[in-house]
Image 1 (cartoon, rainbow, N blue to C red):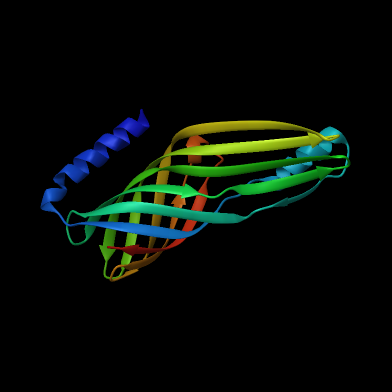
Image 2 (image 1 turned 30 degrees about the vertical axis):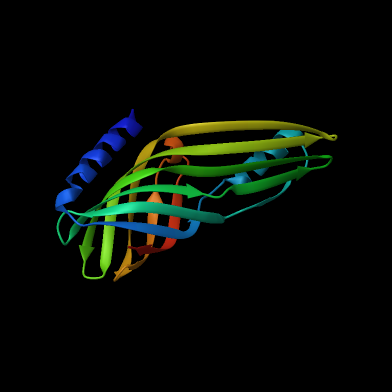
Length: 191
Protein backbone atom coordinates (compact mmCIF):
# COMPACT_ATOMS: atom_id res chain seq x y z
CA UNK A 1 0.00 0.00 0.00
CA UNK A 2 2.82 2.41 0.86
CA UNK A 3 4.54 1.61 -2.44
CA UNK A 4 1.36 2.50 -4.31
CA UNK A 5 1.04 5.82 -2.45
CA UNK A 6 4.69 6.65 -3.03
CA UNK A 7 4.40 5.74 -6.72
CA UNK A 8 1.30 7.91 -7.18
CA UNK A 9 3.01 10.87 -5.52
CA UNK A 10 6.04 10.34 -7.74
CA UNK A 11 3.95 10.18 -10.91
CA UNK A 12 2.07 13.35 -9.94
CA UNK A 13 5.30 15.20 -9.22
CA UNK A 14 6.81 14.21 -12.53
CA UNK A 15 3.62 14.90 -14.45
CA UNK A 16 4.15 18.52 -13.40
CA UNK A 17 7.77 18.41 -14.57
CA UNK A 18 6.76 20.02 -17.88
CA UNK A 19 6.76 23.30 -15.95
CA UNK A 20 9.96 22.67 -14.03
CA UNK A 21 13.59 21.81 -14.60
CA UNK A 22 14.28 18.11 -14.11
CA UNK A 23 17.77 16.68 -13.66
CA UNK A 24 18.89 13.10 -13.29
CA UNK A 25 21.55 12.00 -10.85
CA UNK A 26 23.70 9.08 -9.79
CA UNK A 27 25.20 8.58 -6.32
CA UNK A 28 27.61 5.97 -5.01
CA UNK A 29 29.26 5.42 -1.68
CA UNK A 30 29.17 3.39 1.50
CA UNK A 31 26.29 2.28 3.69
CA UNK A 32 26.85 1.71 7.38
CA UNK A 33 24.51 -0.40 9.51
CA UNK A 34 24.77 -2.15 12.88
CA UNK A 35 24.22 -5.88 12.33
CA UNK A 36 24.25 -6.52 16.10
CA UNK A 37 26.77 -9.33 15.53
CA UNK A 38 28.01 -9.14 19.12
CA UNK A 39 24.46 -9.73 20.42
CA UNK A 40 23.96 -12.68 18.05
CA UNK A 41 27.29 -14.21 19.09
CA UNK A 42 26.27 -13.93 22.75
CA UNK A 43 22.91 -15.60 22.06
CA UNK A 44 24.71 -18.45 20.25
CA UNK A 45 27.23 -18.77 23.11
CA UNK A 46 24.46 -18.89 25.71
CA UNK A 47 22.51 -21.49 23.72
CA UNK A 48 25.52 -23.71 23.00
CA UNK A 49 27.48 -23.24 26.20
CA UNK A 50 30.59 -22.67 24.07
CA UNK A 51 32.78 -19.77 23.10
CA UNK A 52 31.70 -18.15 19.83
CA UNK A 53 34.09 -16.19 17.61
CA UNK A 54 32.69 -13.81 15.04
CA UNK A 55 33.59 -11.31 12.35
CA UNK A 56 31.32 -8.87 10.53
CA UNK A 57 31.15 -6.09 7.96
CA UNK A 58 30.59 -2.56 9.22
CA UNK A 59 29.88 -1.09 5.77
CA UNK A 60 29.11 -2.10 2.19
CA UNK A 61 28.79 -0.35 -1.16
CA UNK A 62 25.61 1.46 -2.11
CA UNK A 63 24.22 3.17 -5.16
CA UNK A 64 21.28 5.40 -5.98
CA UNK A 65 19.79 6.88 -9.14
CA UNK A 66 17.34 9.74 -8.86
CA UNK A 67 15.37 12.47 -10.60
CA UNK A 68 15.48 15.99 -9.15
CA UNK A 69 12.59 18.33 -9.97
CA UNK A 70 12.95 22.02 -9.23
CA UNK A 71 9.80 23.43 -7.62
CA UNK A 72 11.52 26.74 -6.86
CA UNK A 73 15.22 27.70 -6.82
CA UNK A 74 15.41 26.73 -3.12
CA UNK A 75 12.97 23.79 -3.04
CA UNK A 76 13.30 20.60 -5.06
CA UNK A 77 11.69 17.15 -4.99
CA UNK A 78 13.73 13.96 -5.48
CA UNK A 79 12.49 10.52 -6.44
CA UNK A 80 15.14 7.81 -6.27
CA UNK A 81 15.93 4.10 -6.37
CA UNK A 82 18.69 2.75 -4.10
CA UNK A 83 20.37 -0.58 -3.48
CA UNK A 84 23.19 -1.86 -1.30
CA UNK A 85 25.68 -4.69 -1.27
CA UNK A 86 25.51 -7.35 1.41
CA UNK A 87 26.61 -6.80 5.01
CA UNK A 88 27.87 -10.19 6.23
CA UNK A 89 28.73 -11.77 9.58
CA UNK A 90 30.33 -15.14 10.34
CA UNK A 91 30.05 -17.00 13.66
CA UNK A 92 32.19 -20.03 14.56
CA UNK A 93 31.64 -22.55 17.33
CA UNK A 94 33.70 -25.72 17.71
CA UNK A 95 32.67 -27.90 14.75
CA UNK A 96 30.00 -25.51 13.44
CA UNK A 97 29.74 -22.19 11.66
CA UNK A 98 26.97 -19.80 10.72
CA UNK A 99 26.89 -16.88 8.33
CA UNK A 100 24.27 -14.21 7.79
CA UNK A 101 24.02 -11.43 5.23
CA UNK A 102 21.66 -8.55 4.58
CA UNK A 103 21.14 -6.29 1.59
CA UNK A 104 18.55 -3.60 0.89
CA UNK A 105 16.81 -1.89 -2.00
CA UNK A 106 13.95 0.55 -2.34
CA UNK A 107 12.51 3.79 -3.62
CA UNK A 108 12.60 7.13 -1.85
CA UNK A 109 10.85 10.48 -2.16
CA UNK A 110 12.18 13.61 -0.46
CA UNK A 111 11.79 17.36 -0.31
CA UNK A 112 15.19 19.01 -0.71
CA UNK A 113 15.94 22.53 0.54
CA UNK A 114 18.94 24.34 -0.98
CA UNK A 115 20.72 27.21 0.77
CA UNK A 116 23.73 28.42 -1.21
CA UNK A 117 25.88 25.28 -1.71
CA UNK A 118 24.31 23.31 1.16
CA UNK A 119 21.24 21.09 0.93
CA UNK A 120 18.99 19.36 3.44
CA UNK A 121 16.40 16.73 2.69
CA UNK A 122 13.60 14.88 4.43
CA UNK A 123 11.17 12.34 3.11
CA UNK A 124 10.14 8.71 3.14
CA UNK A 125 11.20 5.42 1.61
CA UNK A 126 9.62 2.10 0.77
CA UNK A 127 12.22 -0.65 1.01
CA UNK A 128 12.97 -4.36 1.10
CA UNK A 129 15.51 -5.93 3.44
CA UNK A 130 16.76 -9.33 2.24
CA UNK A 131 18.38 -11.73 4.69
CA UNK A 132 20.29 -14.92 3.97
CA UNK A 133 21.66 -17.29 6.61
CA UNK A 134 23.70 -20.48 6.34
CA UNK A 135 24.41 -22.89 9.20
CA UNK A 136 26.97 -25.69 8.80
CA UNK A 137 27.07 -28.47 11.38
CA UNK A 138 29.22 -31.57 10.84
CA UNK A 139 29.47 -31.00 7.08
CA UNK A 140 25.70 -30.48 6.59
CA UNK A 141 24.63 -27.00 5.51
CA UNK A 142 21.21 -25.46 6.17
CA UNK A 143 20.07 -22.32 4.31
CA UNK A 144 17.42 -19.82 5.35
CA UNK A 145 16.28 -16.72 3.44
CA UNK A 146 13.76 -14.07 4.36
CA UNK A 147 12.61 -10.78 2.85
CA UNK A 148 10.71 -8.08 4.69
CA UNK A 149 9.30 -4.88 3.25
CA UNK A 150 7.92 -1.67 4.66
CA UNK A 151 8.52 2.03 4.88
CA UNK A 152 10.27 4.60 7.03
CA UNK A 153 11.56 8.15 6.98
CA UNK A 154 14.81 9.60 5.71
CA UNK A 155 16.79 12.72 6.56
CA UNK A 156 20.04 13.96 5.13
CA UNK A 157 22.12 16.76 3.81
CA UNK A 158 25.31 17.67 2.12
CA UNK A 159 27.27 20.01 -0.07
CA UNK A 160 26.50 20.59 -3.75
CA UNK A 161 28.92 22.41 -6.04
CA UNK A 162 27.54 22.85 -9.54
CA UNK A 163 26.45 19.33 -10.54
CA UNK A 164 28.61 17.46 -8.01
CA UNK A 165 27.43 16.58 -4.51
CA UNK A 166 28.72 15.01 -1.33
CA UNK A 167 26.23 13.96 1.30
CA UNK A 168 24.91 11.75 4.06
CA UNK A 169 21.41 10.26 4.31
CA UNK A 170 19.94 8.35 7.25
CA UNK A 171 17.20 5.80 6.42
CA UNK A 172 15.05 4.59 9.33
CA UNK A 173 13.14 1.31 9.61
CA UNK A 174 14.58 -0.49 6.57
CA UNK A 175 12.09 -3.07 5.34
CA UNK A 176 9.67 -1.74 7.95
CA UNK A 177 11.82 -3.15 10.78
CA UNK A 178 12.24 -0.65 13.63
CA UNK A 179 15.68 -2.12 14.48
CA UNK A 180 17.10 -1.84 10.94
CA UNK A 181 18.47 1.59 10.09
CA UNK A 182 21.24 2.55 7.70
CA UNK A 183 23.38 5.59 6.97
CA UNK A 184 24.58 6.25 3.43
CA UNK A 185 27.65 8.43 2.74
CA UNK A 186 27.95 9.25 -0.95
CA UNK A 187 29.42 11.19 -3.84
CA UNK A 188 27.10 12.03 -6.71
CA UNK A 189 26.75 13.79 -10.04
CA UNK A 190 23.73 15.37 -11.69
CA UNK A 191 23.16 15.85 -15.41
